[in-house]
Image (cartoon, rainbow, N blue to C red; front, side):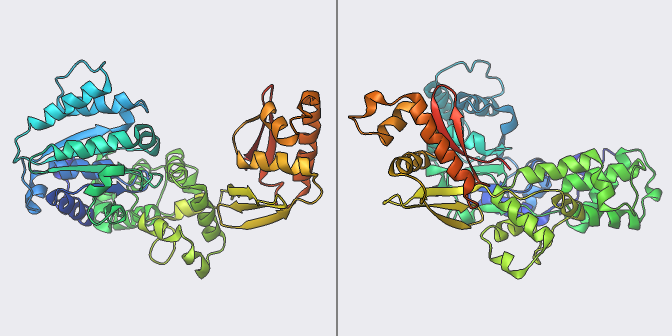
Length: 438
């Protein structure tokens, strides 16, 4: 028996998540499938779409046309997505070097050739945010039109993605998400004990180990350390089968294993800086006030935190203790009278700083740069801001440089600002205000 083949998975594998997917497909609805990196999104869809007995269990027609498009095989070039989708619908296609409008026409033709009574489900795996941004409104509006081209409207879209996705960036396609976009999300679960044990046994066989050497104590230790995270569970099983770790290995010892550290790093990189800061605070000193943080509920939905606000895995907890907070700026602005500026961090800490000590000219220059935060302001733009039209002819680059040096010095003297902001010279062009990378 090939213990790695999804045909041998138990029929009730990840039963809650499968039920959610089945309901969406049954209703011809579209769905976002969000989970931590490594939680098993792709395998879950593989199991769901390739097991006729599972489809029958949920009263779905085994003749459903499932079409898979892997985002990892697509560049951020818009034509690449249309070409991949066309290839997925018709693997015999060989020529894709065509304008987008022609690719769209061919996609509409391919979809129209599927019998009207046959359901069609297009699965976008590894659908990353950069791809979503590159495609823009036109792509999602086209998917909406593609669905409307079906006489029975029996076309669903499943997007397998992560926390970084912009949930309001699907444009017309949002109409296909039942009850609104926020209610059309399948937040993937972690493996329960039975599914985790099945995965452990599968890895044990794959490593060529005798099953009698796999005790309940081994399985319980692996499950406790992985927290049901599919990739951590798999790596831990493999390492224990090879004898590289044991049931008594500490979280710190386990984190020294490259595969386990890489899995935690992938989860970490999926978090926004604001989420990272909250996670670090929880690891250092948990308190009930953190439960009111806007991101706390999201971290629970994605199962990084359990219902009690604890991390899903001791290994990940250990990983978080090695990280440092970053007070990245969320917003900065001058008031209309240019008497003070306000800086807000991603943790919603706000600082109001009076512009005392700066001349009217320096205030004008600073507020202009702040209004163009992170953008390069050219020397000519700044001269027009800081000097009157009558004085411009005599203003040299050196004169502007002296003004900017004074502003830079003033920023460094402000304790609320010097840890956040850096006034950078752009050689030969001008200046820009950036966040200090911490």
